[in-house]
Length: 352
Figure 1 (cartoon, rainbow, N blue to C red):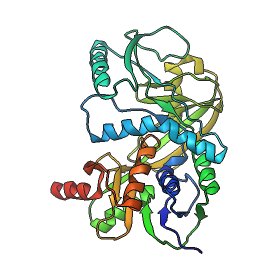
Figure 2 (cartoon, rainbow, N blue to C red; figure 1 turned 30 degrees about the horizontal axis):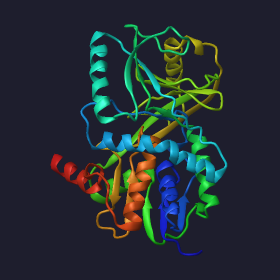
Figure 3 (cartoon, helix red, strand yellow; figure 1 turned 120 degrees about the vertical axis):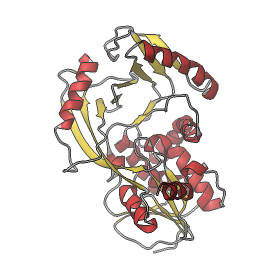
Figure 4 (cartoon, helix red, strand yellow; figure 1 turned 90 degrees about the vertical axis):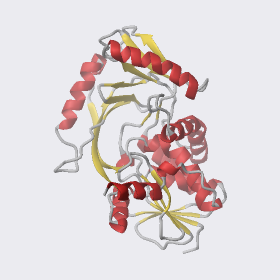
């Protein structure tokens, strides 16, 4: 097997995106996945690429903003190379406001968004119109943002693997030799490896569940209501998710999906009667800091880590891919200090 410049372990959204960025800079890339592409949390259903609220601004929110703004051109490039759709569309999001306090907070955030988002996206408080594709809102007011986008996780991964093949990457299911720089993007198993390596809790798994309904909402915006994402997709389905379970007895879908389904129908009665087309459960990698962990693997020369996408992996992926390619190929470190493994280990050591 020929030598390569970069070996990436893990065929989820972080691993495949970093491979794409490295290929774009002329590197020879090998991706090793021991199960299947998107076998972990990347193979889900929801695909909500949504921002954090535009207040209490920090490095994580700024990084996410840049990534969300990059996404349209980034996924267009993937689609052009692969000839396959990703399901990406920046269609915005609607959120109901439960009471007067929530309305006041949302109005303050209009000003915050104008400061940190500029003219690149809007956060607005708008009156509900009573349209069928709106979440029920006790106050009669909604938040509308124009930054949120949708992406079909499975179509997106298929487009990425197709693009990587077209550009000559080695995609290996099973085991293979590591040559060149090695990037570990192995999800929950990778967080467990790091925790064992340093004797500290770097992160853990959180179970998530989602379902999809056979309902064609067209180009309607996604909805976020009572902790629930309701996302129309290009294939004529609506994804609903997800749970966040720190304790579970079975990795597969269970009765909690029935509760998600009922909540979605209560929020959007138009979904009543739509058939369930898929049910999904997976274990998502959550770093102790709740931010991704990126950069050097301390004490292992030539080894790097990209992990902890948790609920925002697809939204963070374009920017994660670029800063990891900067570091691995050019030695240029543009990773926020808050995201590095060194910073995380220092904080976890101080807590002891």
